[in-house]
View 1 (cartoon, rainbow, N blue to C red):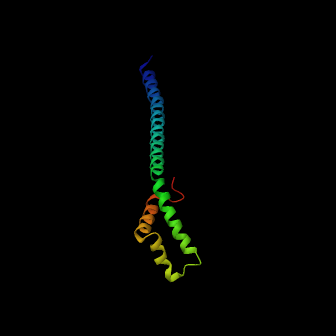
View 2: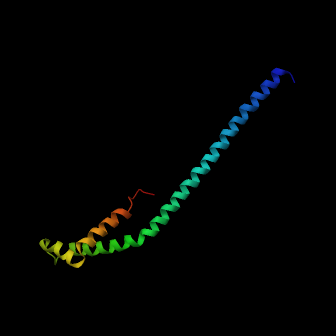
View 3: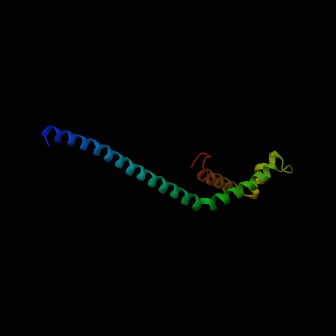
Length: 109
């Protein structure tokens, strides 16, 4: 094979395999991204399941507060005293802090 033809063949070979190598690298990057996203999603689900009991307990306490707020038998001036008497200010504060820490926005996946 003449020298010019060998050089042209080598350049064509390098050009073709450069594109193939880039495709392979992009495929590998795509697989790594998918694996990392799946790992992060699993970790988030485990964390969510671990904290669901705390969230439920805080929600139950705040449900009781809501019942007192909605009760027509409780006057507005007596409302805080009735809530703190039934549940306690510190428990209400802890429940609110727990719910703030554990709840997610609707668009958080």
